[in-house]
Length: 409
Image (cartoon, rainbow, N blue to C red):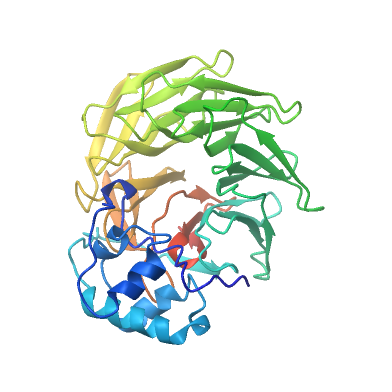
């Protein structure tokens, strides 16, 4: 296990939408404030504490222990815990509004080895192994669910991996969000090959999907671009989004081979032709809409999370119509990740505490929702979810180093 020094509390994602955070927030006056500023500010803006749902002393201590080794500086840890518990106790300022449930969910979890790594974006390999990346820990990892055994591989400096996919070659492909690369790890040898972006403006590979021909398609949020990588040749081609500041985020491949892309910076989803890389933008009605992610149903309809308005949406390519439903926790719920399993639409509400896992039944147009556990606290945000081969959901709680599998039946 890698032990981080006491002055880096990486992973304290105890608020919801990143866009709601204020870097100018001020910590409350009180004994221990300086220790908290010194320990936390190297990795976190103060708003991650001031806008949190708060914790008891035991729960603050439990959360901190997922980021650093408290035994390395026990007196400093005690001072930090006392300050946080006194000034930021549990509150209901951003409480979720649960929807009635019709079944019990089983949350199976694994605590990954490296502290503070912000584990995220799990995906299943054909052999049943579950892969994840630890963005702040700069690692990629693999779980054997049958035994619980885990292995981590360190990545090249500043790769800061954002997501991972398993290619047709059986290798793990990760997005080097921090060093403008896409990396390929051979799990048999541990060898890593990096594919560098072709120009300086393409700087942040983000989320990716393989198509049926083995081509890897990926988004670059800050660069406002979408790319394709041919693993056979290493050739990378780039296309700019139709509108400035669209901030492409989630991406999916449709049955006809076309790409569907979510706009995290504006009220749109985008359809791309895989041959020409030409894009068609579909506007979503609300001006405040931002779309983190989307998924594609068997009938070809595009389901998306209207993150800015707190809604779930569906776009029908055949009729060019958009329909939306209010999420149970309302306009500030900030839906984030999304996946369709057996016709049911699953997503999470990241702007409330606890982070809620929501299921929508398109037939009855009804919702159900469950709080997502994270050890003995509720701390974290699901940023990506994908089904495994058995129809379970793979999710994560990066604040507490957890990868989870949710039985949905």
